Image 1 (cartoon, helix red, strand yellow):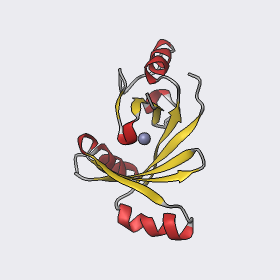
Image 2 (cartoon, rainbow, N blue to C red; image 1 turned 180 degrees about the horizontal axis):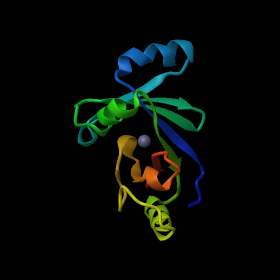
Image 3 (tube, protein in one colour; image 1 turned 30 degrees about the horizontal axis):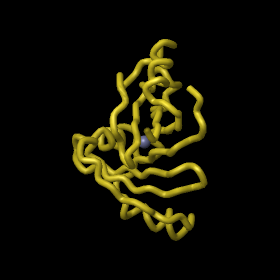
Image 4 (cartoon, rainbow, N blue to C red; image 1 turned 45 degrees about the vertical axis):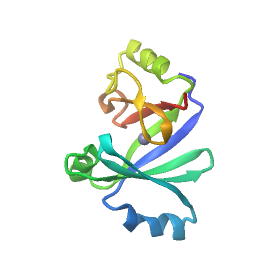
Length: 134
Ligand code: ZN
């Protein structure tokens, strides 16, 4: 797949506002973008840490997959996202190796990324995202 780095870590939170003081005042990171992704029913907040970002995910609706995740597992790390040069190619490779795919084809995510998710059943229980900047 030619993964270059961890693009971001997705962290499910009930309230971005409630978490900002920890990330900004304790860790000293700067939130550089807050964005609502309507079709995902989430509000996202981004922090840059070296090459990697932290993405806070707050549900904007009870139907949001993030709301369901928090209900089931509580707040915390939701997914890990790897940067690859070509999401479609990486998906095809995962598929050929028997990995269960959530997304059969890349779709657009926050920050203009092409993204696709692999199913936790096939990834040692960690929801895994692949993304590229094409
Ligand atoms: Zn993500």
